[in-house]
Structures are given as C-alpha cells and as structure tokens.
Image (cartoon, rainbow, N blue to C red):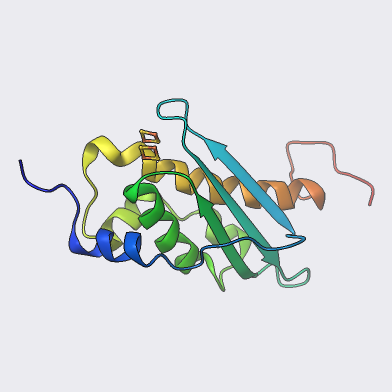
Amino acid sequence: MKFPYSEKVLEHFRNPHNVGKIENPDGKGLEGSPACGDMVAVYIKVNPETKILEDIKFESYGCASNIATASVITDLARGKTLDEAKKITWKQASEELGGLPPIKAHCSVLAVEGLRAAIKDYEEKHGLVTEKEPTTE
Ligand code: FES
Ligand code: FES
C-alpha cells in the first residue's frame, strides 16, 4: 500500500505552525469529531477596529491530516479579516498540502470547523451575528 500522506503534510505534521494556546483569547472554538473522538481547539486575537486576525493558535488531539490542515489554515488566516478567514476551506488547505487522502477529508474539515467556531465565538460575544438578537454591549 502506498503511504497516503504527501511530503508537505508530513512536514506540517512534524513541525506544525501556530501550535499552542492564547491566554484570554478574543474567540475560542472547540470542535470534536464523533467519528474518532479527536478534538481541535482554535484561539484567536482580533483587532477590534479592523477585525483583522492578529494572532491565531491551535491545539490538536487529532491525526496528521488534522494537524497539517490546522497548521496551514492558521497560516492562511493570520492577517486576514474575520470575513476573509471564514471563507478558508479544507479544499484550499488540501491543495496547499499537495492533497490529502480522501478517507481523511473529515479530519481536515474538523480543523476548518474549529477556525469557524472561534470566529463565531468572537462574533457572538461582540453582537456581530446577524441571525441572532444583537446584544446591547
Ligand atoms: Fe481523528 Fe483524523 S483521525 S482527526
Ligand atoms: Fe476523526 Fe477524521 S476520523 S475527524
């Protein structure tokens, strides 16, 4: 059987970017997968005026696909606005990584969901979620 991971995936897996935790983050996302029981947490710092992601870190308890995707999407998201970062997809990450094994696609999706959950957390705390009642703070 051919080894399923590209060299680029292994590189990010062995040496992931943006690993860690941000104390007092502006937003935090925690997503778990019922399929494997793995989890990923994403922490963000947001500039209140420009809504640009000034810092982003993640902790993953998942597999190589999950870790490599989180590494790539946190790189992509840093310096972007929340709206831009929301549009980052696992397909983009997969392309960046030279492809992921199809059986591992949901591990990659899990990392993207973690990023989106962190953004949503920020938006909820700041009354930016339009489908919900705006908060008065
Ligand atoms: Fe669980 Fe990939 S096997 S995150
Ligand atoms: Fe758990 Fe892929 S097997 S997210």
